[in-house]
Image: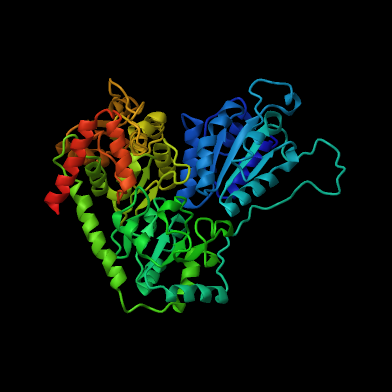
Length: 589
């Protein structure tokens, strides 16, 4: 039997090291599915319930491994469904290849059923975006797509018409008139690890050596630089601030860490930003510039592998384009070690006070259950090499402050797109990548409900993921964002009856339990985490617990009060919760 084009596609992906494709079949990709069937010993196809989830899984796979993630969807609506997950990959710089089907070439332009020109639709999301129109283009277009996605940490897209999918591989049906052969390429890519020249490093060292009160801001781009970053922090007596996406780059118990930044950050970080005269930015493109020093107030040294991101958020005195770990290794000998550690010690003391305040909010005797207590108990239940996936919303605040990075733990969420719903498919994608590790999805009820069918995907694929739902029966983050603008909440709380997600987990063939009392939580988590297969713990938490900023500004407090005056529903319950929080902190301090 002769090889079809779809086999050339799949075997080339295998040569690139691709072992998993997430997706849903359809009549627009039957040829590609046949290619997967013929080479199932080299590339496994993971059938999911929704194409959006497939794109999220591929994105998470790429984020966690650094390798290419691949998703597959049929023509028309199937390809359209991929877009949200692909934008997550684009904005968080994850290398992902999307493969879609297209109508037969002979009917394109006739308004044929499901005729959506996905190559045009994907123009913004994809760095490389091509429709295959000749069998001889493969496998070379695969090479270019994969190499582009990996080199630029971006999305690539190939759409393959039905007739091309099943054509004989390597054939050229038309006479060639161009002075060129059909493309012949290879499956080779080497990631660059550049280090800036010594004269640029010396300029950076001069700026840092002159600084009196220095801070380091680390993003996910510094994930491989943890050890050398702490050595630099020690030499400069500089506290380390972490972006939310960069939460895992340094352990939370490091003596240099002041925690997160921004609305989900800590009070010590907010104080530190106001105090410093020098900022060293490492692998970060943190967008919320109101939480950064005022432009011109501090000297800035920034290290990033992508030259286009250096200087985007703050005027940069010394931009260094290079690998963060390699650049810090080269920079460290040029730094003058500080004998005076007063600046660092000041923020170590502030962090001790902050940790005590956060621990007070993790009280087990609150009714309804405090979400801070839930996040803390999840942290306690997880192994030291656990991977936590998280959703967007208030859940991200609780994870940022109460789920501890220690050991080999990793943490993933939709950083820049900040979309709802990726937590569960992220866990599935990462469990495929790391079958031997504990993977936990810590998500809100709003995000879970969007793609809850994928829990069944985990069950029938035999993936032992654990899902913990912070169930406040609302879109909590939107609720508080409305109030901070001075508006009473509107349209953000789900009505009764309350959805029973534990019942869905059982119906899907997994373990499920509903928890409504704090005293029942430790045992429920222990039993769920000890379960061999997928398990879900649906926890009813206080819906009136606000994710307060680390340091509340006068303007924020004023707007919050305005919302109360303008008719905020549940204001008595919210006030009571805030009062309990304050009493707990005073009692335990």
